[in-house]
Image (cartoon, rainbow, N blue to C red):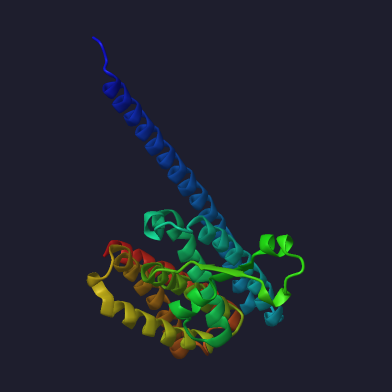
Length: 269
């Protein structure tokens, strides 16, 4: 069979297109893997920040712990900066599954720190404001040494936490607040549990308005949130009714036992 020049040209064009598609898919896959690794790093460092912040209930140097946690969160933001650089010119939602776990953990850590400082919930707008990054154009500065330093060009890029990632991070925050409640009681602090109970009730009411109409992941978290609220309210009830009867050093053990009973009852229901 004799191939005409037109047919040969068509086959060569098809091969070129296939190679271009292969290169594009390989590049996208490599980028996805880099983002997954960055997301893991963000998750690990955020968890370490949360563990550090839990020490504030027993450590007298609370200000020092907050400063250390801020340094750790700044290191996490540098990782998020790398994610933002990877996503320049890309549709973030095509890579959202790769970075979502890290962003949720970051929201949990930064909202936990914010609560300890202000006793209120950080907004998604405030979180996104911290994820705007700028960098000077150093190359232009090197090529033109005599230029005015005030005329340096700044590059700005950002990464926005989606509303779903924010809600999932806040839902996970309730578990940390429940642990903070138990730790506070164990250290003789009987005021914090009542404060946490009111705060968690407000969060639960907010999530109840969403109900099953929101994303599936959010409705799944509602059950865990309800459990955390029940444990804190149970601790407050015990403090109010039997607080004077139980020695302070035994309160944490009593609450832990009651929390396990609640878990078993929920498992049977």
